[in-house]
Amino acid sequence: MSAPSLKEFQQQVSELLLRHRSLLDVVTKYSQSNASVNRAIAKAITECGCIELNARHQGFSEDMPLDQAKKQSKSHMEGHLCENCEDIVRSELGKNIFYMAALCNLLDIGMDEVVAKEADKCATLGFFNMT
Ligand SMILES: [Zn+2]
Image 1 (cartoon, rainbow, N blue to C red):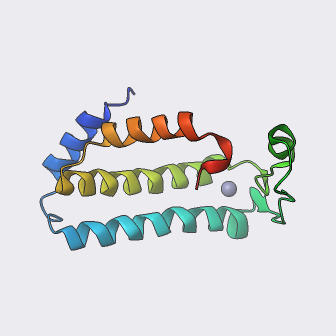
Image 2: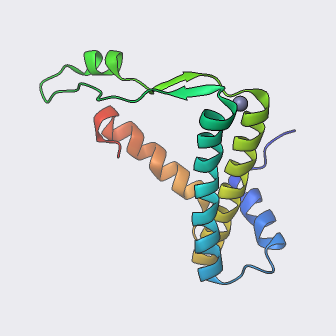
């Protein structure tokens, strides 16, 4: 299974999306699919239990050196997604990116440009400026 380019994927989505041509439909489906990603992760924690959440303050301070901040930065997650939960999360992420592609199509935005610009921003701004 080889992944299509972002451009090819957008074209594929464009050909499939006959029912959801309305910007309002696409925007709300995009939002709903994002909530489904979060819900799948929450269920992995509360129903399956393959991952646990143990969140607390990161303990960063203004004058902390970058290497120390990186060292003590925590994901607040313990464990790994089991095969079943990973399949579900992957599927929900797929639906989410489908609607992102549909949104980009309606607004005439290339996903490849979005990714390229964001990658440039990551390279320029660095660790602390990502929000
Ligand atoms: Zn699981």
